Image (cartoon, rainbow, N blue to C red; front, top):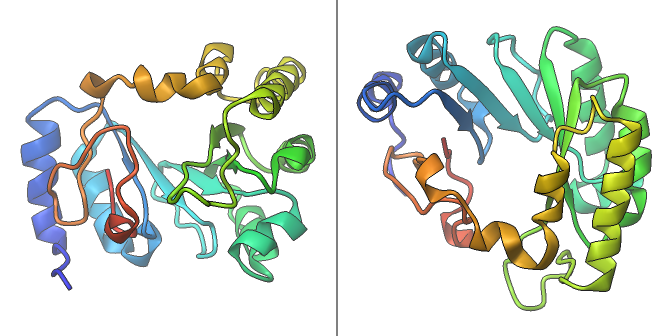
Length: 222
């Protein structure tokens, strides 16, 4: 198992790979960034006036770093808990309600189990979060039960998302153009690789736009 970088080592990574290259925004993602709050705090301090967000599953208390949070919600309570474990949904909701100072955006990854309840999720979180974003589940295997294949059903879900956006124009953060890119793999083929710099938990560059293989996942990406 590899040795995790220390706080000072992360400060050095941020200075060399972000600040010196004029990176204006970073996102701290999974594993779970809040397991190492001292690293998050150090990165926020180094980035100063730049834009920093933290992507979390929301099961740990939110800390006011003065940055935005993206919290994963996979459906209504029953659907979310079926995917993430019993009692997780209420724990996440409680953490959001107890930390109104946190700038929370809900991120819903649409899959074969939750596409029917998208509108209910929007309705429930509208008063609790400042925005919601949508993406589609990326399969990890050929028989991934969560994968919503390209085709008529997926396109009908996208049409539904576009309709929801019309009703919640200030809450659904995706643009209509972004939502339409989810049809037929257009995002993958048009991914703006020039726009991203991805680092793993050791500070090494990784592939841009594409999720790593499962054995590589669970590391901190920025």
